[in-house]
Image 1 (spheres, rainbow, N blue to C red):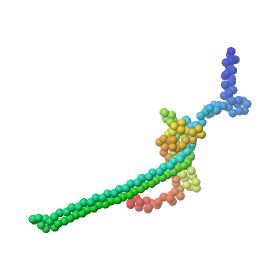
Image 2: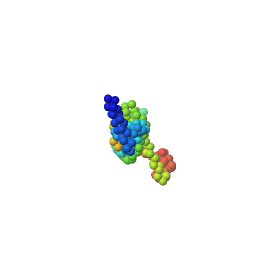
Image 3: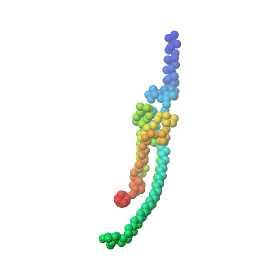
Image 4: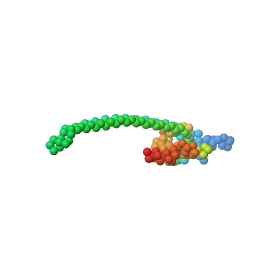
Length: 194
């Protein structure tokens, strides 16, 4: 009876070790907790996931204003001690017409790996990531923060940026090319004044 109880325990130990004695990879890695059935998607603080940034934004606005105001006033000649006043007539006309259009569009496509910094009480994940690229003195910095749901993370541990709530995505550059593309100090002052 005792041997019958030990048999499942021995069999379980052999399965867990995966035949490590025979030189095979174990089914469970006790150091990392990974196994054949482990969920490889990020779900704990410190886990990494890849964000696929595909942001397209466009805005269009137009306005038209038209105003037309006309007033006419007239008066007759003065009587009595006001006889020096001649007949008079006054006409005032104001016209205004204005048109305005504005259009803006932007597009950003990138991939960045972010880290889970907090698991919220409802299970959502707060993530943050930064990537700095320096090519010949031109620095490009991508930063992203936000909150995502674990179920929106794909099996390959990626998530689209459109699934990130409270997303803040910043893409900044610095260097000679960026500085040259900016207006000069004098131009900035003139634009500010006028």
